[in-house]
Length: 341
Image (cartoon, rainbow, N blue to C red):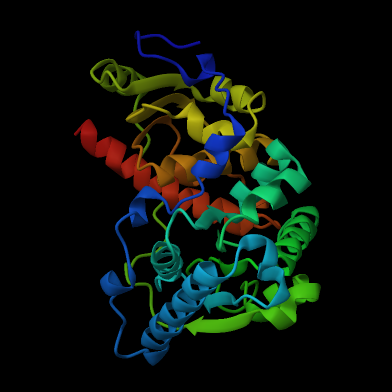
């Protein structure tokens, strides 16, 4: 329960038809207007320009296939499959979104690894294959290897799509300080998708983080009364107790977290504290990703963002997910804090 009169996310139970889940597989708002022309290759790293050139060629190849070959015949010839390998902040997501735009967002499906696994959970495996097989290109951003079951599921999904002639493109995400031990690299990706490895071309994207920043987790928590007052001043704000919201997320399928945020311009949370268990933490990660996709500022009443995940979680197998969530939530919390001065 909350006070202050602002609507609560815990009162929302969105119903999302399959058509909407598929329609939302487009590049996120951050990259809605991006293209190969807006990517600025660093002259100090020639692989960036080489990646633009190669992906432009892939887009042209996919478009030619789409003009000449109906989807039910495309499996007869191998479609292109590329994996963008590089560090954090070198523009892999920009390039992946540009590829989707170049092919045509009506002909391409674009989503994160988690969004595709959630789609299978919501629709079932075969319906997901049938729906995605009607696209010319499937883009998977932030491919993850930390859950063996999900990795096997995604490998099988990609194999089915490749066999039907769908072009594939994927990236992974490497956080600052992860270059080396624990880094998700091309060898890991190809090993885990054994049946498909020979089909994927590795496109290297070298360079430094263009943002020249480390993960932002140092935003100070606000007082709960400040959070309530700020939420009351905005008609598009929601206000929730953090513990209540975490409990509510367990009752909503992760594929519906985006719909949970429909019409929301600010998420205000009171009583923010460290998450208690791994399953709760992973649901929070998905919510943060949907908030970030939609550029929704967040107000955190209580602890700082950096204290959300206990040390044992940050050292465990899901650490990259948690650090990504901390980076994104820190950015959204900074936006929210700016709203209240």
